[in-house]
Image 1 (cartoon, rainbow, N blue to C red):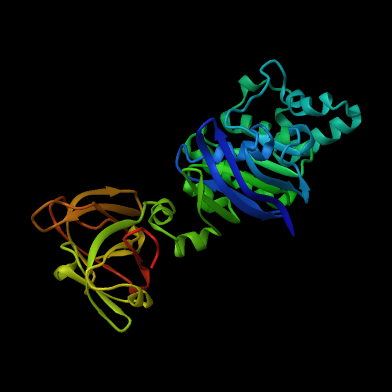
Image 2: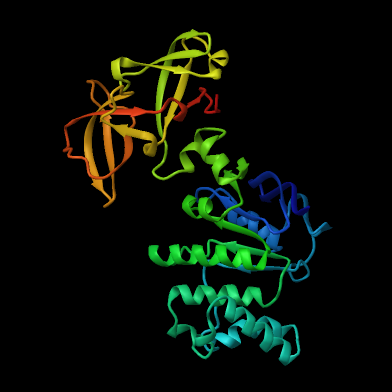
Length: 365
């Protein structure tokens, strides 16, 4: 059942077009993440759903009701901001109860709602503390609790973990995922962090310059990116791209030429052969985690620039080993700690099923 629907939503500021026609639908109880680089319009789109920004064109529906021009208070949504926005003179209980008091709810109901939210978020021992006595993660949980007590139809999160350090972000991701499971509520979450998107989302909406690049589950976007932008944005470290020329096409196979390939060329068996011709420029995509060091049948012949030890794994930064203008650097992520030093020859292999091909326009072949 469709719970949230955007039909060709646009947002203009004078002559400047920020959101250029976004359409998607979310089911009841679904966790949807808007992801994209800074300035892509994801927070603006979230604020339009909340009613904090006017819709220039298009229609917006929540739970089957057209709320395109409805006031924020009547939409039954609750928003958690990047800044905690807690009242410093109020304790945790009063901060969480504030919205209910403004709605003139009975005192018994307020206490019951706040105590239930505090139990869910493990804040019971902190109810008498002021915000200044809380850690960043605790403050963010209070801000989320303030949303929970209202029992909204839709939760909106605007980069809620950006102010936290790496360890707290990891902890809060788990907390938000558990919260979603326990409440069963529909949630829309904005982030520029693709790790948050991959770990939290049922579906991801990838945005760029006010347009949707692709919508799908995390695994769909990782395994079948629609274009080089999505392929490079989803995955950490990002996908490696090598621009190559098609030197031959035969049946279901292509031969691609580039100095970085072992022997100067790479043969790929792919159904995409029917959509390519000799002389075409194609982009070869190789994920760092799919590259293997010391393969018997290497795909890439490179020179190591730097090895970055991560403890249980190592990131290898390499470049073309041939003379001439160096191309884009290549990153390989390998388990363990290979005994390599800068300047060493680096032979990398990859399973055939993990080679991605994109045409000259950047679209997946």
